[in-house]
Image (cartoon, rainbow, N blue to C red; front, side, top):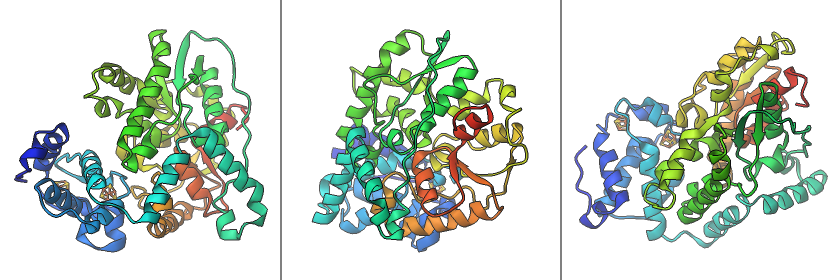
Length: 409
Ligand code: SF4
Ligand code: SF4
């Protein structure tokens, strides 16, 4: 695609990057075929190709309006279009640039600013989110059924092993996951402990920054990244071999630290190293001997695996967890249109509720079509979102593995 980026923009790092990305697009439109919002709304501007044109127009000095912002807001950032695109267009990176630019130029209505501001002031902060969640759980019996379903029941975590091992890995503590499902990281620690690996949650590390990043709070997102790098660095220097991710949504973001901080001289090199060390638990376990988990696995138990977009499109790890579960003896049910987003997508389920509910309904229909005993996933946001719409138990796949090896999951 030919471009004529405005001079003032082209000279910035973001302008240069956007120009390079735009030039790889041949506007064939193949990406529209797998875009969930295009499928639901049928509007070219709610598909990737249309959004690319909107961003191009903006960068070339065209009109920047609330209408453009609305079409960009409706994007799930699921990156399904990147998987489909034959030209390797880095749509997600282009969208980040477009969204950041429009955020500076178009003022949102008051209540929208308030809602986004509240999300950014609560979600990334573990203590604030925990307080809000516990209040919701306390009031749960009094809530109307539709709201009650979206407040998960309290969960306890089985013990975190404390055995010293020569092999050590870090784990991201995260922001909402410790309050919503503290057993997930504990399950990861127990599974790795059985493989002779100690899992360490570094003090001072917290939110990965994805929630702020996706609401265009760029500066706050970078501060979260720097804080995690500072907390992890001494452990990396002491020989931790990987940074394990139990939430694929965080994993895809931490893997991008190297790119996000490339212009920060104080952090660029360490950010690159952190990204290189970051691995989803699926990647880690795929290269370990898991035979000891076979004996306790409920052979034949029917599992419907929901592969989060951040796992299959963002990290390109489609099929990795499925293979592990199959090899352990679980029966994976067929999930039609498994490439489509469930509608959770970070803060999307709050900010775009209508579209999110439609996607949830479609996804649950697909997941339940094979009558599974359990739905498994790899991301806390998807887990809570899916569980809010079904009575079939939804678990993190690591908890299934942990339970198979006699853990508390
Ligand atoms: S992003 Fe890729 S698939 Fe979509 S129009 Fe451009 S080249 Fe075609
Ligand atoms: S990221 Fe997802 S919702 Fe956004 S344009 Fe691409 S496929 Fe569509």
